[in-house]
Image (cartoon, rainbow, N blue to C red):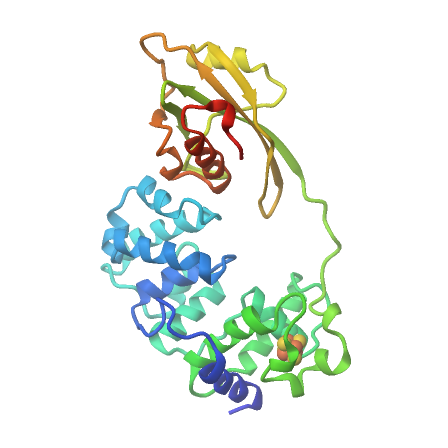
Length: 355
Ligand code: SF4
């Protein structure tokens, strides 16, 4: 076995992460779910979602039969919602094409919606002991530093070089602790900033560490300007209920419940009447909420509006009145949850809302 892999395995067994809810199992469903949830998301944030999701959808058949809105609700707050939609589509595909059994063959795993090459390799390694190379963002950083692979890590050429290295380092045996060890090293030791090199099992062979090149590796592309958008969110309150709307199935927060939105430049009264035939009794701006997505940043201007109760309330399709105390527990995106939680804590005193 090569020296790099031997050290990673022995370090993982002694110092790596153990006892996580998706470890010590060969169940590909649990492993798949954990790999998808862990993309772009920290272990501590994933654990409660993972457990709740499994309670609601204990196996592939249960997930395949579920309504997409139920799946989205269980994912609400975890972000990157395309992951949940793909998971659901993949479960249906497994039922349709693989008689409900998670496929063992690598190409079939890789062919499922939302499963890229590295995720397929991790599932193949953990569930079926297949000798496959992973290369997620953290692992790219480890390889780029240890083997001093310069250049923009997102470029095709660098990515190809890193995949080659990843394949070359694969151990003949012990694929599970090796794969887990690479993930653990990237997440806990070889961090993006201030890596703990003195604790690293491969520091004696790491070119970046020995040559003082940690800050320059992995190489980055020229900084791109992230676009910025603004929206107004309407917290329409009537008696002790607040209006929620279901978002369209695709796009940001697709399929989740959220607050009604309108362009910041449009008059609120006009929008309220045209869309819902409602009249405002009082209106108050709340402090802005900033939220970052990978491809743009969003500034939300929330405004709480108490409307007159006219005996009936006209609704657009996909809108609902929900109890103010519970609205934040609906499947809503994280920044909306924050606003609705502030509304719930203020009780009947709309002047007291702080978000
Ligand atoms: Fe990363 Fe430092 Fe280990 Fe090199 S020595 S792989 S830079 S943690």
